[in-house]
Image (cartoon, rainbow, N blue to C red; front, side):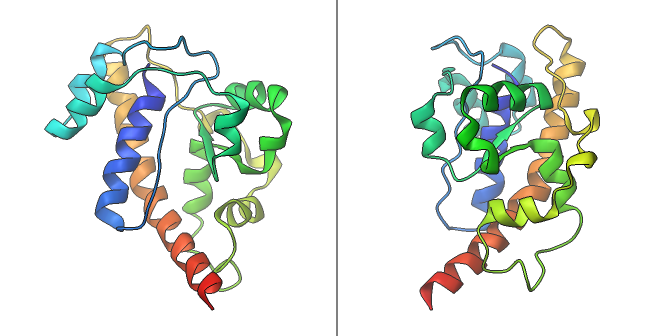
Length: 181
């Protein structure tokens, strides 16, 4: 109702500015109640009419095995949600990351020569150090919070998205170039 829909909206927006390659970003929750609207305070985060329309159209859905199988990358908002997801679907381990963790891994620098041409999840996994995961990777859920809590969450996810999306586009472009050879 809060974090996941906002991440979906910001990923789509940042992706459209970064590249014209195809990206399917979607929101689903490990404990979502099906069909619920996005939290009304998300509208206060919208800078553009298209973002507002996406918030209005959003309906929650619960993550399931079929949805997970279709994803190249799964981003969750906190360590606890990653653990919950992997308890039910351990096969998603190698493509499931905490959004704050990905933000931190991407900030290590652009894809290296060795990383170019590898699938995105392999690039991220090579940068991952299990001992590095911390509460700082989690994005707090503002669902019962104030408008200020929503703005803090929205700003944080927005900053992460603006860092992650160009990296993903760069890795995907290199992977496509490699496959086209």
